[in-house]
Image 1 (cartoon, chains in turn green, yellow):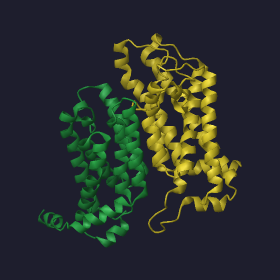
Image 2 (spheres, rainbow over the protein chains, first blue to last red; image 1 turned 45 degrees about the horizontal axis):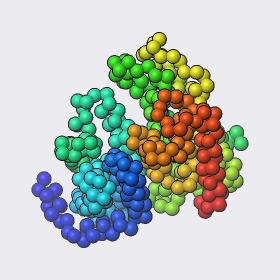
Image 3 (cartoon, chains in turn purple, brown; image 1 turned 180 degrees about the vertical axis):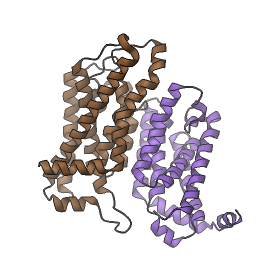
Image 4 (cartoon, rainbow over the protein chains, first blue to last red; image 1 turned 90 degrees about the vertical axis):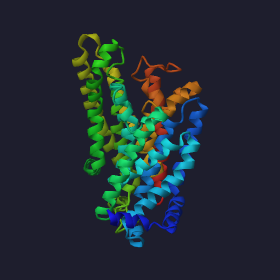
Length: 190
Length: 245
């Protein structure tokens, strides 16, 4: 535990800057951000709530940030825990203004980080996207329709009720990030 | 040509993601019928579309298959050789790109066609078992149209992936659009012209009860959707033929 603590303390700003530079120069990330905001604008124009639509873009954002080749990065920064923390932190900072523009700053940022955690565990982009879209767009609506009792415990709880659901969504995100940090420090490089 | 199709079938069915697509597409709709049965019975719903609507959940299967049959060719094979893609090897084996594309299309149509028939039979059959006499078996023509819709949607996913050369964009677009938060469906609330978007118009081939802004005859609907898919496929084929691998 003390070692984990010490590693996290060695999280200098240049690590975050390097990750920020990498994320900002990824064309796929930029494209996703533009597509997501366009969709959110179209949906609002059509008089509907943009968040349930826009969350797809944020899920993809998290997956793309997580599955972008970390091998070269690991050579430059062999300490994995600070690296993982820096990547998550950078992604969160980047996602926050986008999430605010799309309609729900906190829920959508949490969703991006949840996707980042899951994609770090799954590692492959397409299966990660499939898992996340399957959960947020197919499994959750089906479960909610089948029983109202489970609704407050689903990862997208905050998409419907921001005040009550945010705790649930944040808990799922925290779980995904913790699990992914554990697996990222333990597993062989992808 | 037969050996080419056999090779493409072999490649497709060997992909783990494609196997997930096969499994989800075939099992999801019957599962939804099973899970939803008590709620449907309680609500006393026995519409003409019961069974065919549930079939829509399984569409994720054909979408995955349509995407991965192309995207697997363009995925980097690993960090040891970052620029290497399976497509390079495929094109060395089959340099004639249109022949390759024809074989790929045939393999996809074959797999999704069989999957659609199995899923439709299971879903409709299970609906009969769960609800008995209260629902009629849909006419054979409507079940066939639903299977055609599956194949056409797989081809749409396939064509878009040929254009984008990346699986994430079409997969996200199509999955989101097939759920309750469909952008196409939302647009039909704004303009009735959106009733002619491929996924919306195609559903009119076999659904009767849903609230479509414009009623289109099933055959016309099928022709409009086929025209859309043909246009997308033409663009995808030209790009695949012309672009550098």
